[in-house]
Image (cartoon, rainbow, N blue to C red; front, top):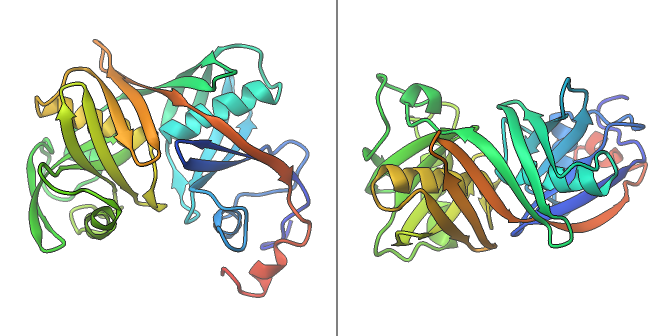
Length: 296
C-alpha cells in the first residue's frame, strides 16, 4: 500500500467513559498504521475521530498482541482503557470465548478479565508501578519522584511521577477548581517541560476522601481527554504513596468513574465499563485527502 492511501476496510469504535478508540483488525486488510494514517483516522473532522487507535490482534505465543497509537500518530506503550476496550472487542468479534486471557502490548503482558459482557464491565492488570525517575524518563539524577517541586504555567507545584506502562505526572491541587481550562493550561506546560524530554501524561488530582479521587487529564499524545484508565491508576498509586488513600479507590473523571486497586504484590488493577459505539467500513478513497495535504 502506498503512503496516504486507505483501503476499504471494516472498523469498530468503542469508548470507556468517553475515552474513545478505533479498533482495526489487520486480518484481511492492507492497512498499515503509519503515523499519518492514525492521525487521519482519529481526526474528528476529516476522519472517524478518537483519542487513539488499537491495531490487532497480532500473532502472539499466548493470548493476543496489539499495538496502541495516540491520536497524534505516536505509539503508546500501554493504555488501560485501550486494553479493556480491546478485550471486549475480541470477545464480541469471536476471536475468543474465554473471559480471562492475556494481552501483549509494547509495555508487556497484561491479564484482562471480562467480568460481565452484557454490562461491559472489564478489568485489566496493568503491572507494577515505579516512581523512579529513570523509569519515568525524567531528567537529572536518579531519584524517587515524590513531592518533586516543579515550576510550570507560572506556579510552583509538588508533583509525584509514576511509570505504569506510560509515564504520568500527578499534581495534587487541593482547594483548586480543577476543571478543563486548568487541565489544558497546566497540562500542556507540564507535558512539554524540560524535566520530561519525551513528554509526559498529566493528571490534576483532588482527594475527596480516602476512598475517592477526582482527576482532570491532559495526555501527551491526545491532549485533554474525558477519561484515562492509566491516568486514573497512576493517580491512585500517587495518592497512596503520598499517604492520602488506601490501596483501593474510586477515581472520578469528567467521563465517569473507574475502580483502581493496588494488590499486595504491587500489581495495579483497573476495572470499569466499556461500551461499543459503532461498526462500519472506511470509504476506499479516504486517504486522498492525505495526498492533497489536508492532514500532512
